[in-house]
Length: 65
Length: 65
Image (tube, rainbow over the protein chains, first blue to last red):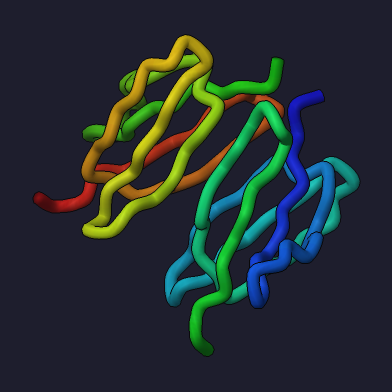
């Protein structure tokens, strides 16, 4: 399968938010919605910093608020 | 491999920008940089609309400018 793990960068370290993520969508107000293969959902105040699909990694960075 | 095809949505249709994309990074000024497994690179004025990894699809939408 081609899902990815979503991390958020805090103080230069990557902290795992959700693994096996299939769906990720930026939303109004600087939020990111994500859902994984198990149906778990999260919405965080963040923006996408970089995506590395071969490494199965999506890195977010926190936004204010 | 777990790369994805990147599409841009125009008038409700999805137009292929680059396939086999590994790396995607939002940049300053509302641009998106991407690079595929063959080393091809593109930068477009767009934002990420949605990501569907199981479908190997990243959908962008055009921004002004």
